[in-house]
Image (cartoon, rainbow, N blue to C red; front, side):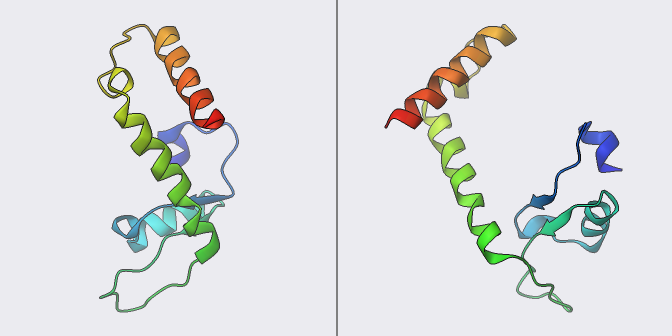
Length: 100
């Protein structure tokens, strides 16, 4: 069960993932949690399923954020070993992205 695995206090309304997570088993687990699966079908799927294209397109924002974050060597290599220091660096990075 995903909730037990991810430890959500409040389950999400939707889970957005790429085609690699489009199996029926994963879709069923998401549905069992009461969330909407926003996962496009693979091109060779026997029974293609529909998904919210606008919501899936917003996934790009998150992908670009993590791509930029990997460019910051200090975060990518987890230079800061203490959790509070690492969190501070992530917050500084987020502020920097927001200002630019």
